[in-house]
Structure formats: structure tokens, C-alpha cells
Image (cartoon, rainbow, N blue to C red; front, side, top):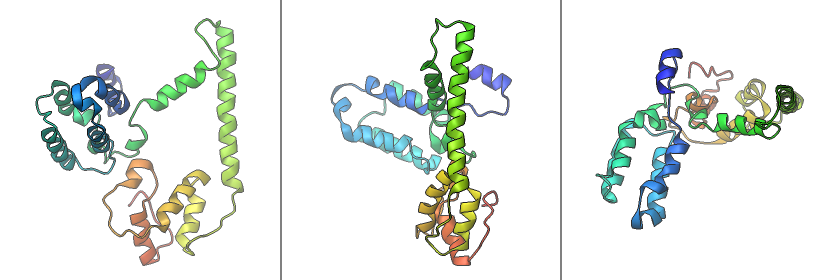
Length: 220
């Protein structure tokens, strides 16, 4: 797959599925370390972070390996050598990168179609099942669009920027944005917009202080 993607999708950035790699971790670590919940928690917190810089990741990885005596662990060293293919720290500058950290979206689509179809289906039966599933997805989309179009703006901050966000985002995203808008943090290195597509609490704080009404996410 990796070879085919690089040849066919020349502008794509192919990555490995984080979930599948981390799922193998318990099978690769043996003995007392396997029962060490603190090690597992630290490992997950380290590799799943969407805000960490590559240099920070590398420093903390080495410290973690030294603390638990894993410097010579073959599998962990192999995974570290290809860290740029699966650790979010190395994709933090790619727009929407954190929406595609795993193959879960692909797997969920496969699963949803398998609910109404089996390998024993004829072509006609498959098409009927396919249309049924697509209709269900379209219905959920219409419900989401209705919620967005029928929502009534109720401000919580008395800021013009909040109303602008309400007009710009869907109802579901605006609910998340409001949480960011209320936060009082003043420093930013999180790349929230690049990661997941909406402005972070830090940028909103800057606009609040400067009374900016219509921020431009692309420029931020």
C-alpha cells in the first residue's frame, strides 16, 4: 500500500494507523512491565499528543526508554525509527491532520455497510443494501443541517466574534467553539485550527482583547 500510494497519489502524505500500532504494545512488552499501568499511560500520553513538537517528543521518548530500561527493545526501536510515519508530532503542520490519525473512519464505513450486507448477497441485494445505508447517512446529514439552520443564536459572551462564529460554523462545531471562546488563556502554540479546523481559545482571546469582529481562520 505504501509503495502504491507514493506512485499513484503523489501529493498525499501516507501515514500508519496509530491505533493498530499501539494495540500491539501489550503483545510486545513482557514480564512485569506489561502489568505496569503507569508505563502504558505515559506511552499513550506521549504518542497521542497533538500539541507536542518533534523535538519534545524525541526527548521525552528517550527519557521514558531510559526510565524503564527499554533502550534495547527491538520493536520499540523499530517504531521509533519510523516515528515520522505515525506520531502526530510530525504532522502537526498539516491541515486537518488530527482528523485522520487512524483508519477508524475507513473501518467505521466498512462496518456500517456490513450491517446490511454479507458476502453471500447477489449484486442486486448488495445494491439495495448500499442504497439503504446511503439513505440513512443522508438522513442524518439532513437532520444535522436542520439543527444548524434552525438554531437560534444565544450569546454567552456579548462579543461580536461569537455571533460571527455562530454564522460561520455548523451547530455541532459552534458548540465546541463556544467552549474555546470562553477560555482565558493568552499563549498559543497549539495549531488548533490546522489540526481540527476551528480556532482555538488562544486566538479567540487575542481577538477579544482587540475587539476584532471577523477573524480570518486561514490567515491565523
